[in-house]
Image (tube, rainbow, N blue to C red):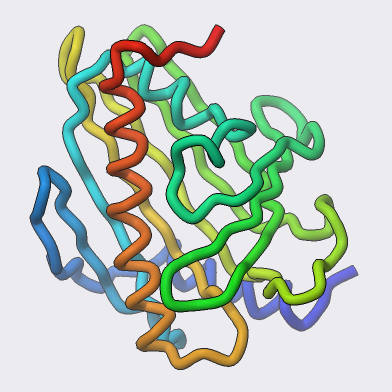
Length: 206
């Protein structure tokens, strides 16, 4: 059954997918570049970050897909788990987070993986799927808009380009400027966490 929230989310996502607005670089620090751009009809901006990781692309990909262990190394993540199969190369994943500047949030996503080991290009993208996850939790705001992707591109045997894109509205009764600030703060922190874990020679996941 379509709800008002799902209809609005679909309309906003369509606007994001067709977005021709220019990117504005807002940060270039610690080897991480961050851009934002406006979305027509929304006060929330898209955020994109890129960095170089000195590790093999398949290792970076393993870190990105290691959702059940996100709480070990991803900032703001309190709980993360796979909650169901979503078809070919896809699964439903739940996360409970404690993001900067706002109260705790949670959401369930449908994450879809595309991988091409021959070319060293891997992509993980997601859309909301809250109806496939746990029920609402008292004191936690349920995020309704959360679209994004990880793009992993091999640059050499031991070097990888990593791109992270996010369009999310944390919801709740908070001003748009706080939501945008929270997003531009968290995105480089998340991509940095993946970089650090991937470059850790002691890390491996069998």
